[in-house]
Length: 434
Image (cartoon, rainbow, N blue to C red; front, side):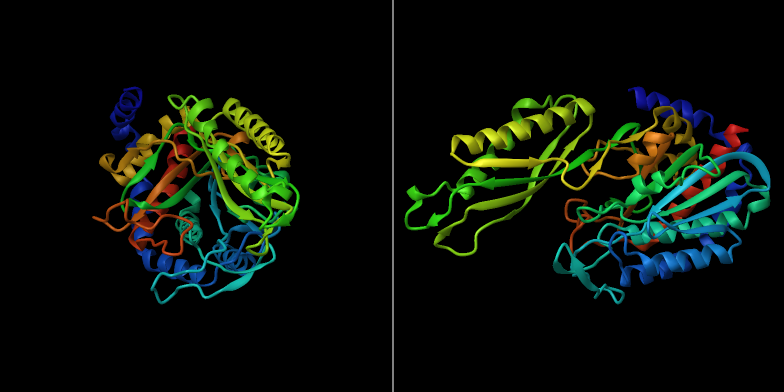
């Protein structure tokens, strides 16, 4: 009921808010005019995807285009990141807008003319590369916002910082990257950013809709590596072994009791997933060692600490009960905090979202157990991260291919709404701060 009440209050103020934002109509007109340009950009990036910290071609196109708009550009931020600064003609706050640029190690199966055929090396393996999460559309949308706002520069009451970020999906073990590295290198300074907005397209939300959630909207994530060591033996004589495969199977099953027996599921969700198992070379040899890779998702620091402690205890004690040992590294290569939408900021900007997409198309959503390194920005300054519909109208969300899959697909007609949304959030925030 609380959020319904807030939405009602916010919508009551819309008519007054609209009077303070005469630029809204201009945003709409300019965004509609560049729709085909957005699609062309997106298709080019989709056909030429690059993994995290390798987005050289993508960054080059972005930087060149921002410069052509008269925007001050810095390149090479956090390896391949691009930052543009647009100073409006009037004084006001500094608003940052962020788009991520990297693709994923996925082989594309979608039958489109601009499908990716790119292959590269990742963690020692040859892989396909695909924009299987929509980052290509994020880049195109933010380039569109840059075009719209740069054409309105003299009327903008503040400064806009465009952050094109590499490596949102993480980097190989031992490398730095993404939002955390951009912050470390000062992306939120000079000029100092007051607030940040971001969006993520969603292939299972109908085009034309925008979804949001105050507070914890996406999970904190830790990856993990568990190495189980036993004793090798001939597969015909298992009694001579300490079997790391059987031990690992028990560990995997026992880890699931953390969610079912240790987590208060009435308060927050949580996930423990083992996504890779590597060990053994042939059918009749019980190996000495086995490695597992997994991910852990939580929505509070308390749950995160509990999960880590229980994972370590379960893995080591289960191994010990079998005569084996287990070494647990968590986090192994990356950690993202909870993507936490500042509650006051979310309430304040709800009217802007409703005016842009229509009240009936701005929907409250449940927490998402996916993770986003946009969360690092939100740890430093107030931030709002929302979701943009990318599923064709009338399609069943349960049958629409999900993110990070070879069949991931987007309806490109939703991109213009993304441009309008980020542009209006920026301008409306500036107007409200005057």
